[in-house]
Image 1: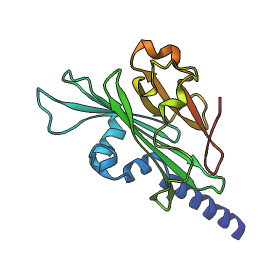
Image 2: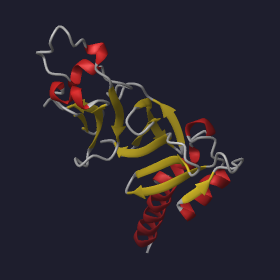
Image 3: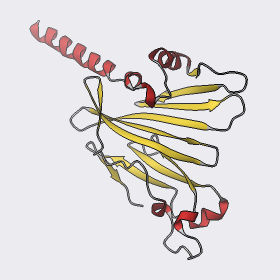
Image 4: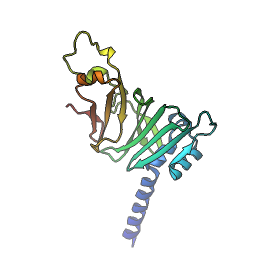
Length: 212
């Protein structure tokens, strides 16, 4: 009887631990400045309804945010319903470490349709319901343009003249990693692009850059 009771208690404890560390709980634990000033009530509404209108808008400018989620992953799409072209994408993803604890990756990028940039990339340890920033998990906030270009650039085409839109993708086709992506802002640059994506795979301790 004691053994059965012990098994039940262990199972109950693990269930509660898992519940307390869902990606939705992590999302709600993020400070306001990481989520476009979304309050706790706004986050709850967003999770339930999957869309939310930012308060304070009018007929000239109204902003909405759409919510989508998968296993250990959340994406927020901010956009205007009044004609403006700007947008922001915020992604959140959880990875499990080899010791059973978790790390969380936060990404934000935005701009216009053909001209957007990676704004911030943060990595956290997540323990006991608390996020603690950890900059030593192997993910750079940005990558230099040179990493995506061919080696035989002509002298007339300097690196700084090639304009690329940049963003992290926290849910690439490779399930156990994230990738940094670029998109040329002009078709004239396409032939000088060596690769449009660089993948970082999670090994249970940190992210490792995968060489093409």
